[in-house]
Image (cartoon, rainbow, N blue to C red; front, side):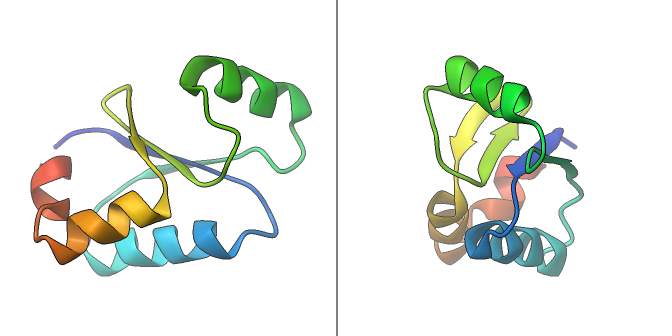
Length: 83
């Protein structure tokens, strides 16, 4: 199975929804909460070019955020992406 990493912050409704979707589909992930890590947020933005949360990385490649997860789920591709 591919390694799924979810970068999150608090408060963040999209982060909670992304975690709930991954949990509901039985997709294991590592959460990295950057709520109290300003330097970590800056580094993530430099690496991905994104300033929004959540950010989902699959095997080291930026996949997107909650909307991309939701679209993949609706298309039936979410489980395949993490397999």
